[in-house]
Length: 289
Image 1 (cartoon, rainbow, N blue to C red):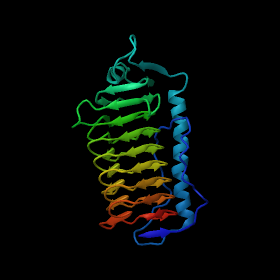
Image 2 (cartoon, rainbow, N blue to C red):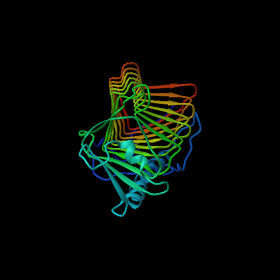
Image 3 (cartoon, helix red, strand yellow):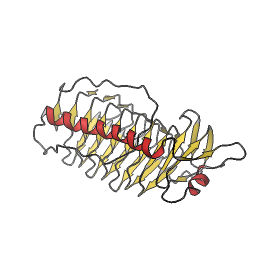
Image 4 (spheres, one colour):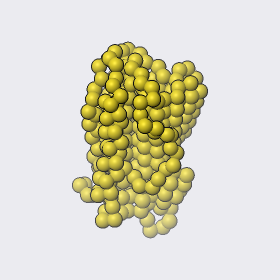
């Protein structure tokens, strides 16, 4: 396992959640590290900078797609608006970009998203999607482009968010109290997961299978299994996260080589960081205890 200590400028954990969503775009990491080799500070810094730039680029892209010029639909409990989120999604014409504003309330439904939609809640404290069928995902994102979810609490499904071969943004939301994993990434998914609370899920907070997300400034805590579980070549980039009090491991890597920087990993049930099957994590400025 490669480990570098105190080589970056300070990247403090920041729990200020600024307004302004981001939308995922492909992440190009300039340096790949060979298992068992010594990582070089400048190369690790360059990889982290690439991840930060990807987040910044997403902000601009989403502004372009879903700015004031974008068409809008409103979901509300009030008469005259769409009464369900799925009904509003179904009303979006193929190929057009829409913002769907979900006003405060608890919406009991399982949601299947389409491409070119920004699902925007009024805040994770007041806008809630609760699965109507607990054995199915609360939200499904399957082979889609240009998708963002912001300001919504997602609860009660198995898992909370299922992401398949897609690169959405999940931003400033709460993925909590799901009966499986909080966020489950499969088949090359590459989401950007930023500034969320991923907590109290009965599986892992985030499970990655052959998927490599950017996981940036999240609280990932008190999940029954792992905080983040990376499997089968899931080379996630994880920056500025708190992974605390999960039932098993803070981060569990199986045949995966994530890069983990400026993370606080404390009071997990088994190990702070567990590597198996030739996993070779690069760890920078982390407090693991």
